[in-house]
Length: 279
Image (cartoon, rainbow, N blue to C red; front, side):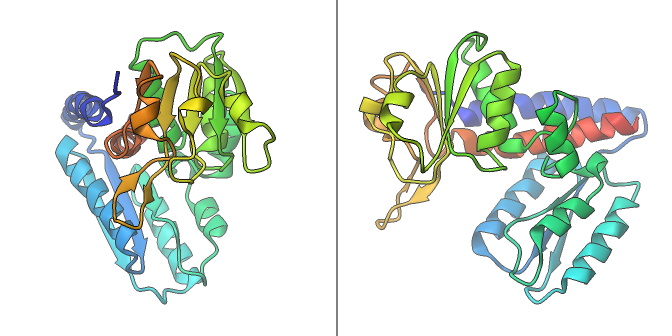
């Protein structure tokens, strides 16, 4: 079965639109500010998609574009202003940032209560310790995709390939909270294939095109492909060799159309959670 991220995102957004209407009836309009520094083409597409998604569900969206040569102190000052803006429930600074700006300083300047990207150390720490906070959007989307299959995660063996702060580590902690037995693999893991073959749930987020072939996958496993890689011919592929692995997996996400649509959807979910907290 192919897990259709677009269809699941559409369903979730329809539910969110209803919640937005209920909040507006209480006098609260959820608001999100997205800050884009420079003119990175991929970032511009992401920001445009986020703005469009906000409009779709009725969230107030403010896009702030700054020039490539923006000084770090000016960006930090802007964040301070957005932190104090009562119309905003969420603040997102699109990464990557130009080299003159320290992204860690920027992330830490956003109030944890408005950090709908889930990158602030306070929110990362809350996930680690099992407290309620904002969780990074891609890991949250991955969990929703797995749950949409109807399988019981508890007791399953899960393997996460990739240890980034944005995807690998948080998704591993989310799976732990669902009582899976979790192994994190990375570029230094020995016998990667053998480790992957044990997985009932396999999450590939390593950034290497079609690295995970059918011989890495246990029959009947749930395979979540987080990778987005562009081949020399322009084709978009994931970290999983989709055509061969789909014959072996019980469920698999496609690229594109799998994890991607859910990432922005979970950003909207976090913004609504922040608005509810405000209420």
